[in-house]
Amino acid sequence: MSVGIYFATTTGKTEDVAERLHELLGGSESPKDLADLSNLSELQDLNGIICGIPTWNTGADQERSGTAWDSMLEEIGNMDLKGKKVAIFGLGDSSTYTENFCDAMEELHAFFSKSGATMVGYVNRDSYTFEESKSLIGGEFCGLPLDEDSESDLTDERLKSWAEQLKSEFPELN
Ligand SMILES: Cc1cc2nc3c(=O)[nH]c(=O)nc-3n(C[C@H](O)[C@H](O)[C@H](O)COP(=O)(O)O)c2cc1C
Image (spheres, rainbow, N blue to C red):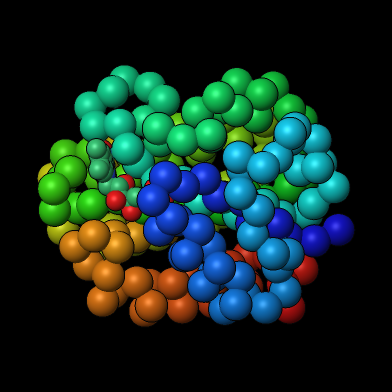
């Protein structure tokens, strides 16, 4: 039983971040592109799941990632993932899409919560500049937002700090 990293991407930025996170964590399995996954049943074999999701669908009410995650949300919600821990990281653009910053993280969070998984990896909002994000839950981000478009100079530091947080939340990584 181990920790897997799954991502979807359109222009490759979420994949790049998934690889960087994998290196920082050491103990996780190699990141997998959701587009190459025929079904989600392998999630049942893991103790922990880390998901990377960009946001491409400004202003939409649902299916905001604009990636392969969208078609898998219902299936995730119907799985039984009790006892597993799930953490989410999201890519977005806090400058151009400041009213929908990393919105898609919230959808993954909602469907994994429905599956009974324990959600971890929440992040304080204070170091981010944006107008609105659906991914704020109880005043915190429900995962790690990253902005490779307007704040790429902050990504290393944000990733490092989140990797340390995950090491304390996923005992399997140590
Ligand atoms: C047409 C378009 C729509 C986008 N919509 C959003 C959005 O609603 N919210 C957001 O935070 N970022 C938005 N972005 C920024 C992307 O999420 C960002 O570039 C991300 O890094 C892309 O990740 P990827 O390369 O893994 O697909 C949008 C970008 C484009 C080009």
